[in-house]
Amino acid sequence: MREGTTPGMGRAFWIRRYGQVWAIALAVIAVAQYAKGRPLGDAVLQGLLWGGISASVFTASRIYQSRRGRHCALCRDTPEMAAAASPAPGKDQ
Image 1 (cartoon, one colour):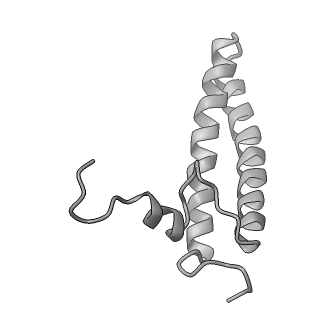
Image 2 (cartoon, rainbow, N blue to C red):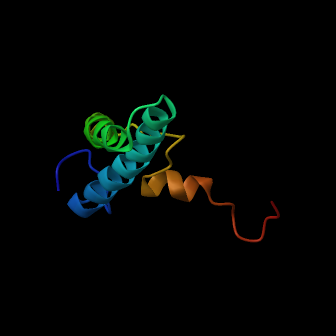
Image 3 (cartoon, helix red, strand yellow):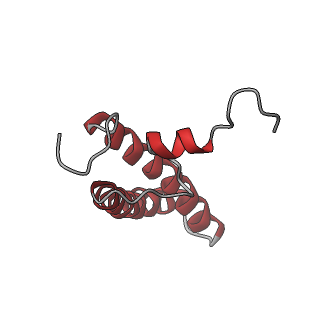
């Protein structure tokens, strides 16, 4: 394992994360382009292209930050952040 990476965040985790971000970006961009009046095929093509670019930048930056031990409080996608977000057993929310 590389120095600075978190256990449980292997290649499969990052591929899954890329896919999730890409799917969300694809949908948002395609809907926005379609709402602007572009034909559906063009809107989907723009979503595919810019969704892939957006997911690549996001995932690369998260890998970079993860290797340096910086965790995203908003994403809560690392095991440490997920554990910190969970309430202690026996406490009411």
